[in-house]
Amino acid sequence: MSALAKATITGVGMSDIGRNTNRPAILHLAEAADRALERAGLTRADIDGIATYPGKAENSPGMSPLGTGEVRGALGLQTRWHSAVPDGPAQMAPIMVAAMAVMTGQARHVLCFRALTESSSQTAGRRASIAGAGKAQIGGWMSWLASVGALSASNWAGWMAQRCFHEFGMTREHLGMIAVAERQFACLNPMAVMQKPLTMEDYMAARMISTPLCLFDCDVPIDGAAVVIVSAADAARDCRLPPIRIEAMGSALRSQETWDQRADLTTMGSHDSAADMWARTDIKPHEIDVLGLYDGFSIFVPMWLEALGLCGHGEAKDFIAEGNIAPGGHYPVNTGGGQLSGGRLHGFGLLHEVCLQLWGQAGARQLADPKVGVCGMGGGFIAGSMLLQRD
Image (cartoon, rainbow, N blue to C red; front, side, top):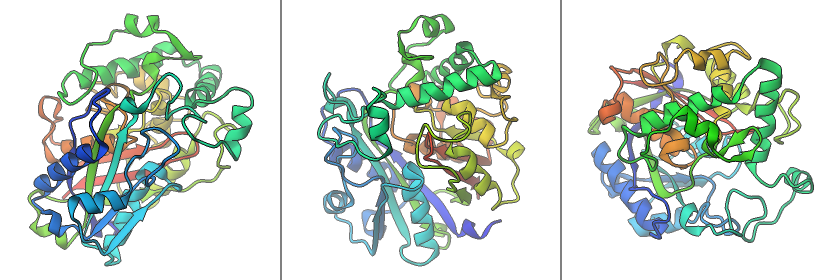
């Protein structure tokens, strides 16, 4: 057991999510928080810390409508510690800093949240996923990409996919296998937004978004919220469920903070963060039972598989073709449908699902007695890795 195992996850919750719900973000958040608290056997009075990513953002429609202040006020929380983390390992950052907070005595139970109203907020001219949408000001590395018309992360991910195709013989069919497998899982998850089965023929016929990525290679913008409660190990003893230990985590970055200037475009920040995580534990990749891997675009999944050491560099296409990540596979990925079919909660939904699996609460998609899970969040240079073990 690593020293980090003094930090645990004791509850997770997700609101009812959907497309164009026109429901205020704070209602989604309150619903997710109450579900997480009920699962943990805690009350709002027990929460003494709060963390989020990236904090309230006014410059991108629906991307981050709530900050810690609104949530503290709406839930009536009296906290000793709070944090909003826009940079670093990004989506996983609030959970990582919450783990450090409970380990150092800054708080006992930290409510970590992500809330979005992306679907309701976007129009033809206002999209949170497009650089410069709404009131956003373009600067830094993004300004160089915008000047050549690369305004969307789909463009940047498309470059990576093209490179993997060129280097390793990956094809659209390999990416299609990911989309089809995640849709199979989604059809077993009543909370997933996409419930219609997806065939390879459907995938291949879909309109192109940014070559070679088509519509089904892109995650689905939604309205919703997810909450993860991180607790000190001694404080977790009185919670309703056996705590899930945070065995190890990693957030290393050994390249420039750009999408297009990494020396090897067949790797991402995931490779740095995963290596950092494995250096902090005695658990090995082959011991993983369930994976939540960031799938903002399908190409991220094979890159995460390689980063985590489940297959060699350039071998993910064959690993996927062998059925490893699909229902019934040895290393099931995104068993709730992921972001490609479940809906985009920027990684929080993936961690929510891994925890449900480890607690045996995933319903029709439940795996057989999983004990070790891993979650990798982020694409491009942004990445955070977390290894979880059921106590």
